[in-house]
Length: 293
Image (cartoon, rainbow, N blue to C red; front, side, top):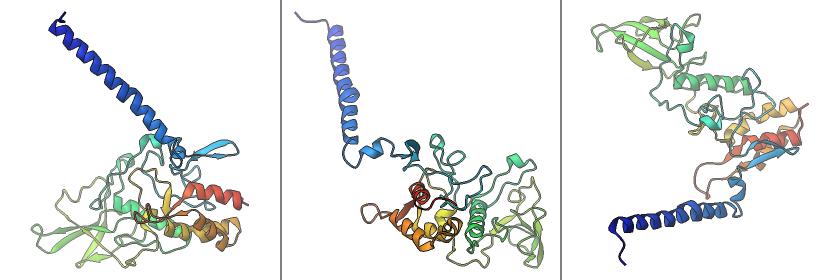
């Protein structure tokens, strides 16, 4: 007996539903679970949880901030790189700032809550802070001595080609001192809150300054990762922090250096990326080997 066309179509659809439910809803998930239990993958599949005294202390895959309640670095610990994920390393808000290299002018509003630092000023401020914390030269090109972007708004008579008639340090406000006293024979002013100098017709001019071409503070110490969760820092940034950590813990810097070497991983597949140091694992090992005084 031949089934009606409409019923045959419904039965074919039902068979397809059952087949794809078995494949995509049962077979595929079970296969992925089985793959996740393979040696070398099981720990990652379980979240790479780190336990201390029987309690979870975080994940080896997610960084942490080693700061106090005021957000200041705790000197006895190695510091992680900055994070743009929520308030820092928040896995529910993973992401980057999405600010690019042309973001060099701060938004200085009359309401401080509406102000925003440019990417350049964020980098300058972080580099200065790391320099002060670790006792190295925190200067960077295009940064002022007080840790903001060294950027001028230059006004010219008649538009873009006339003589300079006014110059403003757009990222500095009172009571700061302009990082340059004059530009093209014109005194440099401080920025006034609520002013958009670019919209007013100024040309934005970054000033390199006399900072070394290769800053002492590595790039990963002043920039966040794309995810905001990366637990690694460069070997260079880790070694920069060794003297401070050793001094704070009262131990030989060479011993701390050896601990850094033990927690330095090589390039992925031997040629991708650069060697890195997992700060979370390093600080846990640091507390275990050299407990804080």
